[in-house]
Length: 198
Ligand SMILES: Nc1ncnc2c1ncn2[C@@H]1O[C@H](COP(=O)(O)OP(=O)(O)OP(=O)(O)O)[C@@H](O)[C@H]1O
Ligand SMILES: Nc1nc2c(ncn2[C@@H]2O[C@H](COP(=O)(O)O)[C@@H](O)[C@H]2O)c(=O)[nH]1
Image (tube, rainbow, N blue to C red; front, side, top):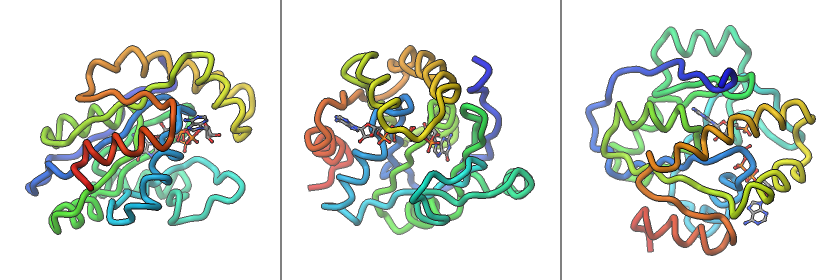
């Protein structure tokens, strides 16, 4: 799949990583929606803010949903080893800032990464204690409905994301757990239970 080629990884950190949870799943399945719902009730769950070369969507703010950077800045983050993992997804690059993740893990806080399949694979290699959770749609048709209905991407980008989704759905067995996002409330509770948060 041309839009989803693993690109980058840096060495394993020395801290305990058992409080690290990685949430992946196809674009539009509802990862951000579930995480936002969960964090409303449990703000103690620390969510990593990724860097991306994607343009902000209406309402997205630098430092909140993402650190929006240009190609040159992203190159520097990679060159300086500042990313725990990074990948190209549907024409843009995305990466997890390393330092903040390690600091929160060192404090023993629950840490959540919301990243794509390639990133999840890289985290599994560098931090094998991390818990990998796959968020699946109730059906392919519902995934298409959600991604299209969100209205944030033009048709050609939706096509690229759906192409990536086929690969991601085929990789579900690589994850420790699958949660099916039929209900945001139910799946948020399941995720909290997996993270052992009351
Ligand atoms: N359980 C659900 N039932 C119905 N609609 C849902 C559900 N969960 C999320 N949605 C809707 O699906 C759309 C996509 O959700 P969201 O943006 O959270 O997906 P995502 O997995 O974070 O996508 P991406 O990977 O592209 O960032 C949104 O319009 C959201 O409101
Ligand atoms: N490998 C990584 N993937 C990431 C990261 N941050 C987000 N993502 C994933 O990218 C796609 C597209 O996101 P969108 O906001 O443009 O819809 C989605 O699967 C995200 O989970 C990251 O740091 N690394």
